[in-house]
Image (cartoon, rainbow, N blue to C red; front, side, top):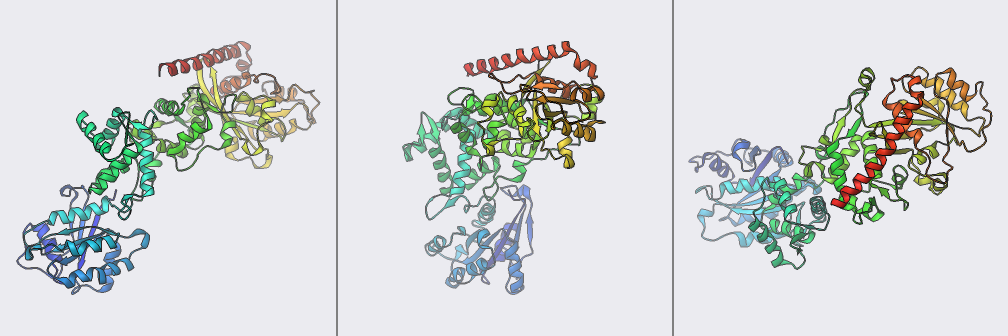
Length: 619
């Protein structure tokens, strides 16, 4: 909403522009009227809409044409004043003033016009018969007010309507000729309906209507008032109420009715509460609230955010199979202006046998987005209405900014839930296969992935000491000379070489010596394609000798050429190293340590899924 309103009064000489302003300010008709009133400002606390209002007078005798043009360009609303007892002043509305204003304003951002018939105390009749055809001819005319500066009739109303024309304009909402809502208004209200339809059954039941009412107007509706609203809809259309709830058609009809009855402010209150500006676009402030992220800190979703996202998943998982079909994904994102997830997402997170994103995969994708691009995550949560449904000031309430990584190292413990592993290796070494294996896909399944659907990320949960953590794998392009800070910034590094390719290990050795030898970032050497014959590497040291010399783990054998889903032990190990980078290599080599971590992973993976299915049954 605007911070202030600027009202300009124009019209022929002697129609009473200055008298109207002076009567408003002094609440009495002035004995002497100057050629032009000084600009006045009405404070916010005495205006109906609580917005400061500037009222500007124009005098042909005192001002130049250039000054008039400047005032027109600055005005938010223009009142064209005519005298109801002066036919010439009425004719000038269309022959002079409206064309002049239109010539001086941009066609796409025309200022609203108010026609003001002053001196109604001097005539017995109304001028509305003459004015109505003019109002129908020009869309920019919001309304017409007949008033009298002399006996103070409709003076306050005139300036209220002028203020209202700026703060609650009809133009973006409604087409008077067609007598229907404009497409952009329908689109915005449809999103609001879908966000408010908490169970996604296509109707707003009494609880949802009451929540909507409380959200927008800070007060619930009494049962009888709710019934009255539905009865109004029932009387006017057959499919506006269904199963005693309000359908989308009924919801749109109510807003059409509000506007037709001059209650634009009701619809605007709803639109603004759900983040829309005067052009029916979601505001930058709504979509992108400020989140300060100091260096060496990461961003994660907090508990409330995950609860909200779980409710969104449940709302759209119609067949209760703990996965989202393509149709269900499409339905979920109907409140977005575009489809945010491409086909690569199905190869970034966990999917079921049909290739549909599972409940865990869905949460993983949200976790990934929040970690890599928190602004995008805030935007997405905004489209879904997080701050409205959870009654928060903004989506920023969904975000946890982790503490500096150096403090974690000093305290030898971390509160983070998401850990990043950068996967580096020469071309063809098996990096992509390693990422896809984390999602449970063996080599046979991986071969069916289209080239343009491949992803450089994979994310899923692992369990370390019974704690659920997210491990985010990022495949770094093998360009040894141009590894950026982003390529190097991570919690653990996985260096992948192909045991069957004699030239593969050299890249890993060089990258380690160039970038990680003096780093505090833990590193693991992965001997990929371990099902194939291991050949001698064309490097001065064998992989085992290299690891021993640099006090690294021995190379970890790995293959995704399996009948079942590939083993996840290595991913638990990577997460553990990311969580405990301060631990000595000797501790991490201890077999008991890995056994404890792995058993915890298995038990909690089974429990986690069982608990979700139990919750689902309760719902």
